[in-house]
Image (cartoon, rainbow, N blue to C red; front, side, top):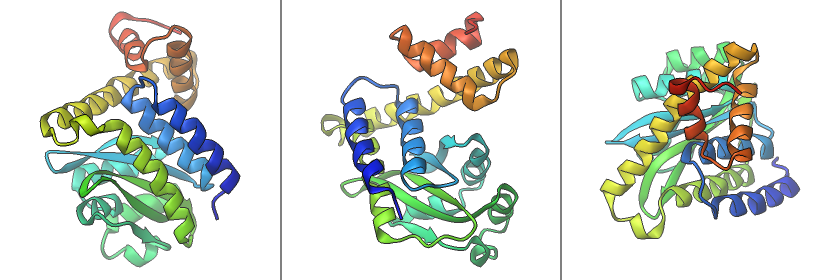
Length: 233
């Protein structure tokens, strides 16, 4: 059961955040973080579609990225099924899908993930990606949990695709590509800072984000400076 009070406060804060200029990758990372907290999940991830293929954007915690990368590489798994069907795919026990997604389920077992739900990221009749929810051990997925996740996913989707660009596929692809390109350089920067400061990548990302906020610049700009200019924070 989701935390309703936390959900309400999260909606309020998320709404205020998305009304301002915001790095797409950070917005999607916030989506993954917030839904993980609201539903008390073991983790979550986001994938976006470009040219009909899903590509990994972000995951919380970092280890969940292994499951998202597998789906990107093989185009198989619950988020792919949710994207292709446009419907939520909820699996309360991944052992039941071992015959369908054997390698994916093996990775999930290694990570201690026993249940998953894929939430399509939609605007109107168009599906642009998927939000994946992960639970440790088996988990029922009540409608209220899935509905709460869908609300947050819809908000993030609407942020990425506003009404004026909704029917302009070229602009949409550029926005999604920027999000994916940002993810690559941010991932590189996280690794550089984590190694330099001898901290984990989650703390490294926090430092990058705090530096960006304190200097009123985009997270991607800080990441670019770390990777290409040698900035250390």
